Image 1: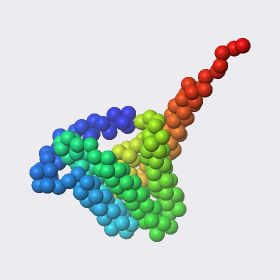
Image 2: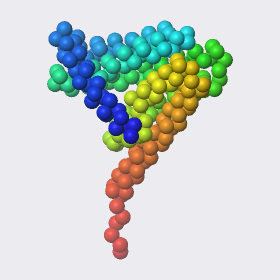
Image 3: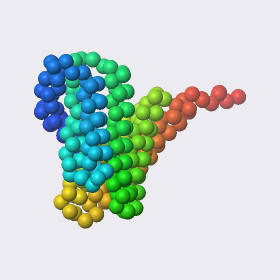
Image 4: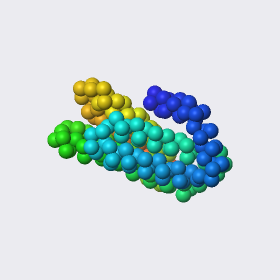
Length: 214
């Protein structure tokens, strides 16, 4: 369901953001530049505002900045090119942005002496990075790893919902969301490792066939 929601929301946003992408291309802006600008925006929101407890302002800045993840992809599609460096840059900037978001939340709650919230944010930070790493490493080894109950879009939507709950004063809203995101990310890690194990095991069985009986 989460992936279906992600696909539907991306399709709806594409109708709005595709003209923006086209305008940027006409202005001579490259997809890679948009990728970097979006990450800088996330860093400003995270370190400039979330670390000081201004979570609503941080949420607005980070949400707007994350739209660049759709805009740069639309720009690349409209240009009709596949750029391996662009894909690498995009993945690297995503990891930096994710680390900044959850790291800044952990830092803020550390200053407020809220160890449970610090632990929840650090769990999200750790598991989110591992979720992405397992997929990248598996695909680098030649396996298919497009599985998992929660991926980056769902994590970002989730922390956004948590930020809204915190803003409107819902007790434990952000904490519950972060623990849930961490738990679902652990499940996703298990799903991906299990999928790769099955593929590797099947490849070994196919490679080592028993000899004929004598």
